[in-house]
Length: 326
Image 1 (cartoon, one colour):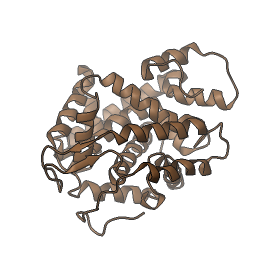
Image 2 (cartoon, helix red, strand yellow):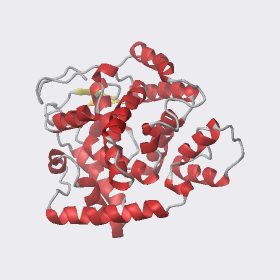
Image 3 (cartoon, one colour):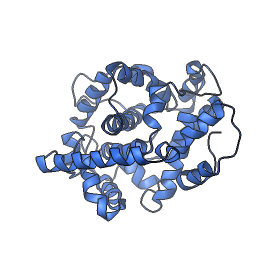
């Protein structure tokens, strides 16, 4: 993995053009043994971590806290998405794209990756305030490799951590296997393999390095979205669940966004929530315990075309359509 020599070494932006993304999209096929299975499959650690409903959704909320500390990402989300005006639609669109890449067959993966690049190509603008090393008026755009890498790594970092907290520990070998599998997913966004962490230790080092660097900085947009997301949690569970999600974040992230920190009292609260969520996960019916796209992918691989009305209802709620990857 290529890394800067020090935390605050300035890296020139690396924007992806349509010509530059094409080799990545074509290269996706090189990772695939069976086009019907897609990028991963039932034996992959990537599916094992991402299939759990609680892990996936709580991981999304947690990782966004780290992403919002990147001024480009916070401004882009604030100015170009409906996360605050129509959060359900925004979430449904996100899950449609990402679950298609994780659970779709090869044809779907390639088509959705190409479509996502085109969506991101329209997301660009100028920063409205200084933050970290970034100045007012600096240009940003979504298809920039370093920003894409931060989104990608923080997303799977949070889910792996939550999987180990709520489901079961992963061995060092499984963690490293996950990193190798994540390279395939990164190709869908145009992230080169030599930029990607190769081992879990490299993931931890990358998160620590960026968290302590002036690549990140607080923005009004980022703080507004952070506050909005906290307030979307139901009031009776808002404070304890938010504490659970935030106490394990890097301290610099906690400080930047005024998040709960790892005080003894907050750690006790987080431990109680962890125990509660583990019980909830064990009590969930199988159809609810795993995201619907995972169930659909298993049915597709097994050649099962029988209609499943429960899956259709779950899909309708989560992505606004009855089916995605069958």
